[in-house]
Amino acid sequence: MPVYVVLLGPPGAGKGTQAGIVAKATGLVHISSGDLFREHIKNQTDLGKQVDAILKRGDLVPDDVTIAMIRERLTQPDCANGAILDGFPRTPAQAEALNGMLAEFGGKVDVVPYIQVEQAELIDRLSGRWVCRAHGHVYNATSNPPKTAGVCDLDGSELYQRDDDKRETVEKRIRVYFEQTAPLIEHYRGEGRLVDINGAQEIAQVTEDLLKALPEQAK
Ligand code: ADP
Ligand code: AMP
Image 1 (cartoon, helix red, strand yellow):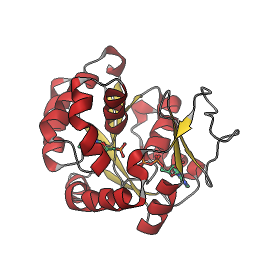
Image 2 (cartoon, protein in one colour):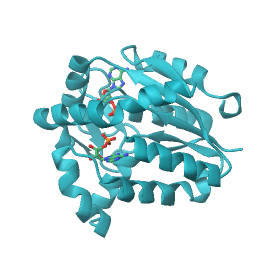
Image 3 (spheres, protein in one colour):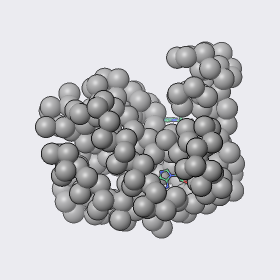
Image 4 (spheres, protein in one colour):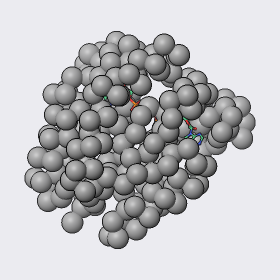
């Protein structure tokens, strides 16, 4: 049976960082809705053109568009054993659509680690975030610097700062998170799937806590 992990947490909590590490450790596929949108924007696809301004503003892409993109990704053969979802679902309607999809694939949302970090730290982290052009590997100027400034350790590609990591947009994205995504915390807690993770710890300690939270068949 496939295993599906939903990483919840505000922008800057460390979802992408942890999903990358946990994917390598478990063999589960890391699916980041934000990375998928940025890939469409880079390739100037119709979807990319449709969502570019929305990402720049820090708003959410409409549910139907986002759900269709994730459904398409989850049906690809590399997801046969499951996936770690990072950035999806972000609204109650997306969470409901996800349940329907996973039931079709013979699975369910197995566990929802909720990575908590306080707001001042989120703003600090995002203002120092650098991302690689080739694969979206994530660094931080102070807490997780690359070996050579401006260059990805893993694939040698250039590092850049995201348009939406500007201070005003970061504040907007955190607001959007509290208004539209935070209700999912209590929803999943009520279903008994939520596991609280202290995201203010060192990256390696957060990974250790996350690995403990995964179902046995993913380890
Ligand atoms: P998210 O995907 O939740 O938006 P990221 O994984 O992109 O978050 O992390 C945001 C920033 O914080 C990045 O610059 C990353 O290097 C840094 N970061 C991630 N985890 C930690 C941590 N535990 N401690 C300090 N900095 C971290
Ligand atoms: P992220 O990389 O997760 O920080 O997402 C970057 C941006 O992509 C968000 O600010 C939204 O504009 C968009 N986005 C990513 N995931 C979703 C989602 N599940 N629903 C709607 N918009 C999303």
